[in-house]
Amino acid sequence: MGAAAPSMMTMSIAPFEAQKRAQNLGVAESAAVIYAAEDEGKTTLTAVPDVCDLDSTNAPAYEITCSEGDGAYEQTVSRSFSQAVQGTSPVTPVTPDRTFSYPINPYGTSGIECHDYENWGTAGVFRAWNVEEQVWTKESCTPPELRTQVAFDDSDPAEWIWDINGRERGNHSSY
Image 1 (cartoon, rainbow, N blue to C red):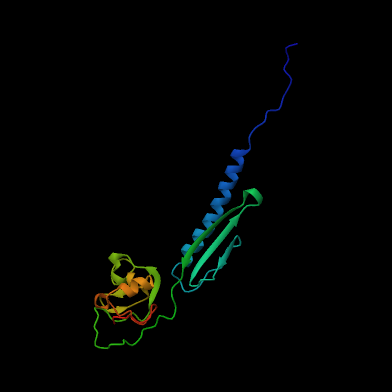
Image 2 (cartoon, rainbow, N blue to C red):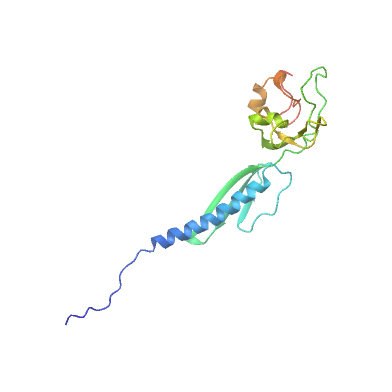
């Protein structure tokens, strides 16, 4: 008799598992990236998505961790961001006879790093300096000299565009 009996073939579910993990990774990644992008450089935090946890241990630097899926299909993603440094009000210079190209920005800095072409927030698309009125209109980007304590200490106050002494990084030893 030449009839073949029905049989079951073993098939791999690996492609399904990979697809499910990729979907969950996409959801977690989207939530983390969107939250970090929305809150970068801001002064207040937005509501944390249900699939995420916010670590504020090192505020104003934060880490958002988002997870999606269950068991072997769970995917977790973390993204870091920083908010604007608050309390950066202008100070009276230690040496009042020192002059700068621009007055102290009364709004402080935003926590978003300046690109070279932004010239400490005085130029570029997101400039905080109003050329016509010769006034600061908002927080400027953070100058390279304020990014880290080492960068601040290694900077030369004679090359500063506006007075950053006594602000986020304290008083400069060469001021």
